[in-house]
Image 1 (cartoon, rainbow, N blue to C red):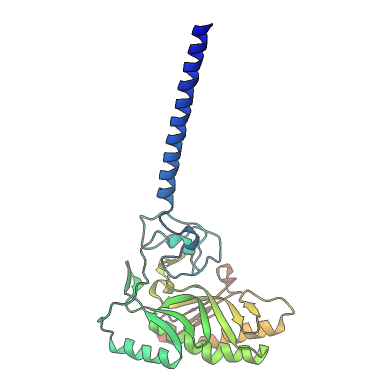
Image 2 (image 1 turned 90 degrees about the horizontal axis):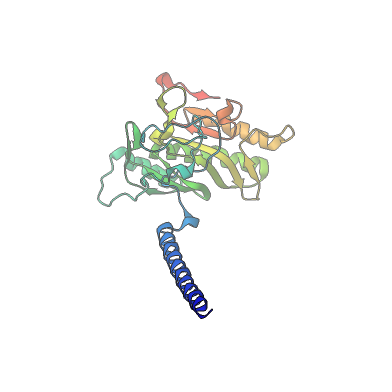
Length: 282
C-alpha cells in the first residue's frame, strides 16, 4: 500500500512537471508566432502603387511586367486595379530627389498645373520593365477645391488635361444642374501596368495617360455614381451625358457605361496619341 502510494505521488509529480514544461513551450511558441506576424500595422495597409479600388470581377488579369508574381483574378481590360494585389510590389511613389532636372516641356506643364490650381507632388521616375512607366510622374491630390480620392499618379500632360476638363466642364455642369460645387472625384485607377485584354497592347494606364472616374461627390452631399442612372434620374443622366460628351474635347479616348461590360461602372479618360487626330468617344 505504501509502495503504491509513493509511486502514485511520484507519477503525479512527473505529470505536473510535464504539464508545466508543455505550457512553457506553448507560450514560447505563441510569442514567437506573434512577433513574426506583426512586423507592420495590418490595420493600415496601403497599396504599393496608387491604383485605386477594384471595380469589377471577371476574367483573369495577367500583369504585363511581373511574371514572377502570382497571377490575380478579377481584372478586366481597362478596369480599375485591385489595390491589394500591389502590396507585394515595390513602392513607386517616392518623392522626386532634389536636384533632378526636368525638361523644359515638363516645367511648362507644371506651370500650367499651378495656374489650374492643381495640388500635386513630383514623384520619382517609374519603370516597371518593358514599356510600362512614367518618366516624370506627378501625384495629384486636388484640383482647386475638388479633391482627388485617392490621389492619382499620372503624366503631367494627363493631369493638365483632366484638370482643365474638371474646371471647364464638370464643375460648371454640376452647378447648373444641382446648384452645388464638386467636392471630390473618386477615381478607380490612374497609373497601372497592364495590357488591353485580348489585344496584347499596353493600356494607357501603363503609361500614366489614363484615369478612371467612378463617382462624383458634390458639396451638397449628393454622390453621383457614374453607372447608368435610372429611368427617371433626369438631372443625373443629363450631367453624365454632358460631361462625357464634352470630354471628347479634352481627351482622345472617352469610354463609359453602355460601351461594353468592362466599362459599366466608370468613365475611362485617356490622351492616347492617335493617328490623324482620331478620337474614340463612346
